[in-house]
Image 1 (cartoon, helix red, strand yellow):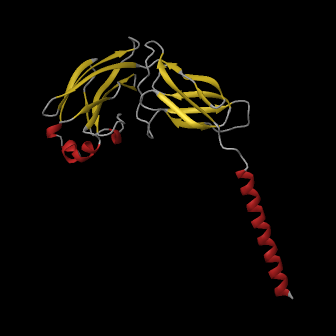
Image 2 (image 1 turned 90 degrees about the vertical axis):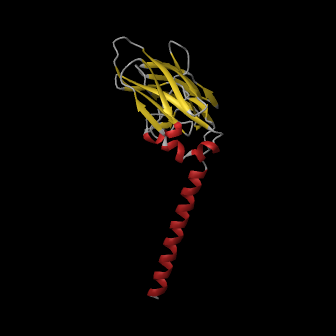
Image 3 (image 1 turned 180 degrees about the horizontal axis):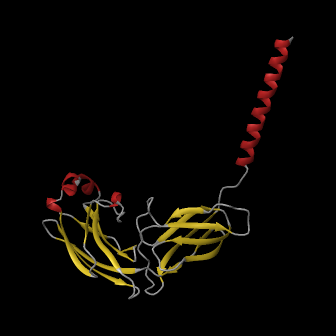
Length: 238
């Protein structure tokens, strides 16, 4: 009798646990998937051009969505793209405060009511603006000419660096360049990458060939210890 009673109690407990698990699963599954989204561009408030940003990976610029007028305690976080745009297509329809934690002089933020796929363009002031011209010779010498314009005369240029990469994502993170050189603190300058003698280029030529024989170059300027970028320029190697 005792054995049968134990078996009966055990079976009853297991049934209760299974029922509880199914109930929890059904409660979770009953929520509708997010049907909203947000996208936009972060523009330079003076030039009205998109502000170039670091690559979208783990060190990219973080966009935070803080839901308003609810009990939400955590923000929705995702990365902006290096061309100055951002997008998240899976967001619940609601009111949000949008904060972009980029290389800007002042806070970049706004409020938005998301209802479906919603556009919100933002504006900010970078610490510097970098112009870049790039060319490549028949023997794969890459020449970069650049100029850095501080957005405030009181700012200080700490360092300028030039870089190239196999992939379109290019920034000062060591995983996002194949070659990099620091150029001091001058606001204008030039640099030559001799790819024909560059082991990174030689040993990884197959990656470049697989990418339509393209490499990507960029300039970074650290001003007041904050890094801004030029646009990324694609070049065809020979």
